[in-house]
Amino acid sequence: MRARDLAWPCTCVRLDATLREAAEVLVHERAPALVVVSEDGHPLATVPATRILAAALPEAVREDPLLAAVVDDSLDDTVRARTEILRLADVLPKRPDALTVVSPDASPLHMATLMERTDSSVVLVVEYDDGRPHVLGTVDAAALLQHYL
Image (cartoon, rainbow, N blue to C red; front, top):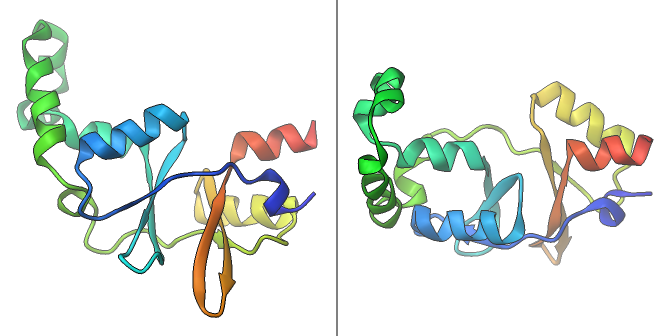
């Protein structure tokens, strides 16, 4: 088995996508992370679903998590509104984490070691054709664990 065999196809999104568009991709694909690419298709970042969710939370709740325990559903509309206004470029760190990218021929052991070293739960499988990237998909830790079972 190689990375190409374990890769889960994914829809890549660009930095100008709204959090709502990003969330729709994550939910539709039941993906562990979102793959963000530049206009020319080069991978820029993998974004866990939790980061999208956290960015949509109102500031008051992020500053005081106990507030979320005492308010009713009244802030749900605020969360929805934030997903429509904010873009990925607004919420990603200026210096994103190093990408964990492997070739389609990477072994499961190589991917597992890379995940451990970078503390990432997902690797990107990218094939380059004439210098142009083609994201084949992602391999997450659960897929690797399943491979070893």
